[in-house]
Length: 233
Image (cartoon, rainbow, N blue to C red; front, side):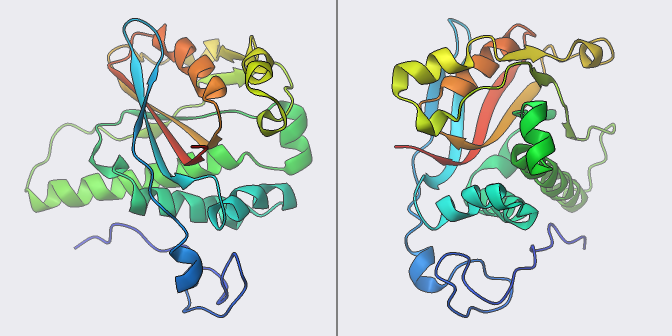
């Protein structure tokens, strides 16, 4: 039987309080208890589309520390966030065709060296592919090859201020015209009537994801779902 997923190896100490933990655990028992689940949220995109938002928890420690670890160049934290999203949301049960990471502006990408949303997306795709293959094998079903893919469907043409540093109205203004569709990818792929999953590490007011979801809606997909590690509640 194929293994669904391989846990991300972590040092044997809590990623939040640095107490010793069992290998492959991210948090000690005390810190893990601080991760309180949040209900799914429906974001109104336009008159036709609403986008459900799946998140692990509120934006608070200990997950907050994993999200902020990107500022120190910690790629492993991004993989850990992906594993926690996979384990603690209902993502595995969704029909998915394309997983789309929210892009960074190239100047931030050069400075940081990686896009945390992209790493999360890539790992979620690996988990989903393995899960679907395992499920189909158990059902002894072999439909035509349909495999979820990462699609770099978005471009960030404007360097914006960090959303967390702005007030609510300024956050909406901050992302206006910041994103566009990747026309090169559109020339070779058809996204109409497909199930799209938009991935980011954090949602605050929803300004960024709604702005991007409006672009995706122009492609007439079957569905748009937003997946984040945390959202501010």
